[in-house]
Image 1 (cartoon, one colour):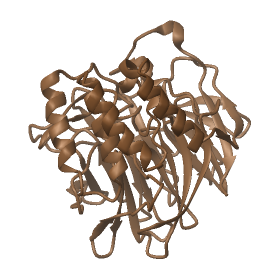
Image 2 (tube, helix red, strand yellow):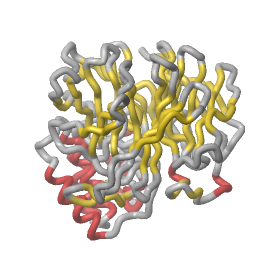
Image 3 (cartoon, rainbow, N blue to C red):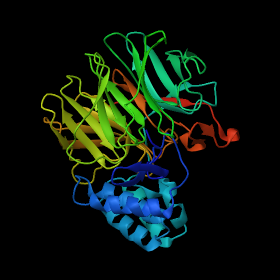
Length: 406
């Protein structure tokens, strides 16, 4: 779950400096880290199904390095692909906003991709300091769960819009809480927690908020950051490690983590979805989405096709042979629905359902309740550094909206 993953740079990955998550903003990287990031990004050219995603990443890095010519030239190639990347919505390009070339590019993007809004208000919190990241729905109890980064707790939301602590801030001394999912078998709740110093835990609660377990990776000298997760009916959990660019399967019975091998290297893996029949897991990173076959263990990148991008999905969800993505890593955030081919490896139709509207202020994740998709409208994670609020006067009640999946 990232506020455009390009914006806040810090974490080191095995081959270079990489992006920190939008969920846990950091200070801007220095030139040496940015140069390493640039070199790493270039290695992805020709190695992914979405060239535009790599170009957007490189352009933002050039902009951070204060190399405007290279940034604009790379952006021109990206925008010409008409995939939906919008540099106007990314602070990485703030230094270019007075450039006529940059303005021409963004005007072209906005002509090609006009605003869309199909959502309506659903819930409004009374607390201003939540700074939420994850949202989940428990169909058995008809209740939503909202995770809080700043207050390090989990809130339950009734259908009537009543907010109450599910796990209070002082109960278990939690780290900032990110992704959250419900185990449909026993109504227990799993969540990921992570502080930017590399401490991270997978948390398990019963349906009354009692802590059943907290699990960490063995010490290996690297920084890790659990971000989002899915839960299998057998109780195992797949979780993305954004800081170290990996995905793990946590075997609940053995209480052990196993790294998942993927078809290509990941760049800030984030959203993750599980097909209804549990035949496949879909992993989103800054550059696209990979499908993992759970029977064979084989993986392959989902091909978005022309004029389409699966990149930068903070939240990712499966619904009736479709992927629903909260894409806040492509500049201006959007929510899009991707119809998949029978083998789950190609996008056959893209429907943008929310874009450049009052409901896409700073969305992170969402939750499905039947055919309705509920999502966080204004996470405010850009007002957070680690677990510290940057400006208390800017804190607002959390808005949650809903829309019908086409």
